[in-house]
Amino acid sequence: MIHPELEKLAAPFERTSRIIWGAFVFAPVIYSGLAWLLTQGGERQLGDGQFPADAIYIAVLLALLSGVIFPWVIAPRFIGPARMMQSSDMRPPTFEGEAARIFERLGERDKARARMLGGVQAARIVRWAGAESVAIYGLLALMMGVTDMYGAWAFSIAAIVLLTQLRPDYAGDLDQLDTSA
Image 1: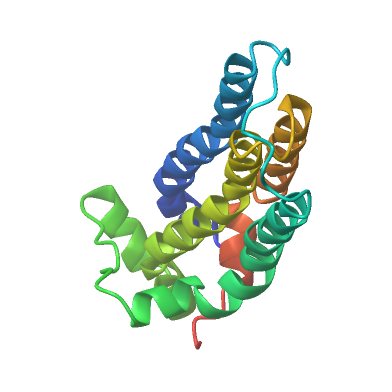
Image 2: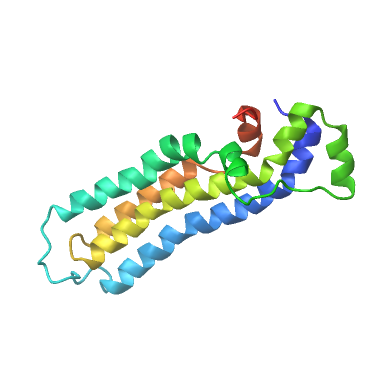
């Protein structure tokens, strides 16, 4: 459970994250529309047919790596908020006005967590990019002639499902944040 005052500081980050997350979720919808347009509503197959059918397996493997393994295994371990704050030019957010007064009322643990709000947001964006790339692999497979419009749509649906699992949850992120890492 996070301190109610910390929730107030996280609110602007959460609002911004919801907008960015919405854009990531909408991107596969755009890719699906593009697949429909490129194939004239599924009437034609793209590509010259010279690519081996095994290329779809490569696309699925890449999608699995970037959409599942990267966001849930690699990113949290190596690109978590604490690591981002330590190893980049990212500066902790500064709070002004009422936010500064709220920040001063927090305990030391919550102050450390508040300093990582930007890192939490950056880490989430990196994870969303990995999940959204699944739809890009589907569109690429369509353009290579390895799959049809429905195959590209399957990749887009998979990306949307993955992104739904990664929706913004600052309360959960801050509750689990280990500031010592």
